[in-house]
Image (cartoon, rainbow over all chains, first blue to last red; front, side):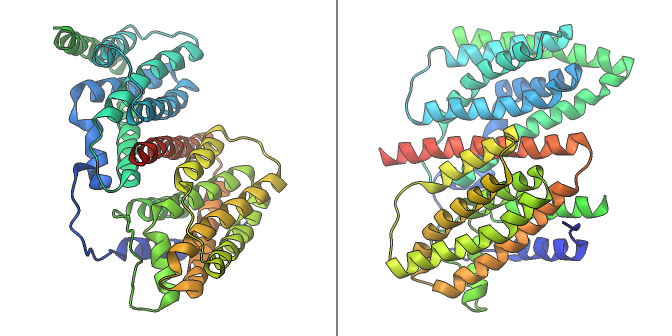
Length: 198
Length: 198
């Protein structure tokens, strides 16, 4: 198969971006579209810090964890979201989310290097609670698909942000900075934990 | 490298451009063929599984990529025409299942034989074509399906050629991460569908 011509690619891009549908109806409800889904995961610091920490930890661990963790988290988180959406209860969700910030901050601060399957299991375990919280919070709306697309893209981008920041790990000052960042995430996690169990 | 970046941008544009899913058919004013093309690019329920299949076929190599390139549009057209002729009104939530199955295939990069990839392309094309035919029967009809087949050919050619041309290991990882995102969206969408059904 020969490589695609850039002109053809540009034509497709223009075609895709130029189209904009006319709306006969006004959209209502928070889950109306892609942007609402995109905004949801970044609306709470507990989620943001945990997801960025996953990326930071992956960058510290290097291959294969650097890509295994960001693959694991969205899929398991979506499973948690599925449970939340269909109404399966899960105890101690807010506490577990706060604990995820504490523990993920701690592993980044300690630059912990467990076997990859343990790292994936830890990340996956907490991802269920994050997903469940999102699933139960999702408001009724018109387009579950676009909302979900935005939601997953935002989650993935948070991991990518963490990985991008984590690239400073190659330098000595970068390793120290990452460990300090881990400590700060842990402190913030304790704050979330205090709020959750109070 | 420049071509790959352009291909990536085009795919991102095609996926992120259609911010509104429409229950109504797209009217471009350019005739039924273009209405079909517009419908395809503005319907993530169809666009994303087609891209996912192209990514998977590309991961498997040039030969499966060629199979997908010709079989998917042909099967889509066939399924659509059968649906228009039968006046079918399918109710099964096809999109979540397609997202989940194809996303998992891409994320896991399962080593299916070439014939299985061809069968997968045929099954996806027939099923989505059948669903499309029911939607297009009231609008552009058969010519709209021809437009969709052209759009499919272009999308599959670009996406699978892009993946086949990738050489660096991290680029394959990026494709697999995209698959995990698609699977995650499928799982969330399944939850949405079940919640709405209740």
